[in-house]
Length: 231
Ligand code: DX5
Ligand code: ZN
Image (cartoon, rainbow, N blue to C red; front, top):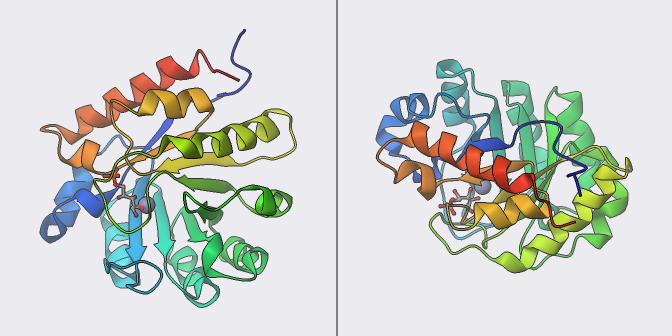
């Protein structure tokens, strides 16, 4: 049966978490044909790791035109998320587990001019959030525990992708479905078949000799796999 979805080519979002932080502008330039640039903001509270914050995002926005996909793994997104939208991020994603009022945060992000994304950890069910997803532009399904790059892909999250895919294809939601963690040559096909639109890849891109070629290769593999969706 023909795939009902994927009106667009798969989006590849390299994660600069796996880049050389001392050469960030060069590392961003090295993935010049990326669809989104994925920037992992960690506060050492929501996750046990500390990365970068708004000043670095502002600097990166000055050196690239790639739409910036900010993934906030932080507490208090109500307070800290809107400034990323005001700074010019394309998409600002925060975690469902980090707030009691995700709708208010999404509305603030949208009012500040960015797309709003909701992220869920591998162990977080999707069902409680289905009702509010119309307030969002992106659903980020984590396929590793948030906090570190280079972890193994957790395939058990893919039914959540399938659920969201069916709702989008039925016209009940208009969100992009993003997957983050452990995406590489071995795992992207399964994610694409489940219905992912946007694939975050950190180590698979930045450990490659040619990061731009790695982006193109991942995009091709995702596009080929999406042609035979298992839905
Ligand atoms: C992990 C981050 C991911 C990470 C992915 O918490 O959200 O974006 O950079 O890295 P890989 O692709 O190496 O799993
Ligand atoms: Zn991320």
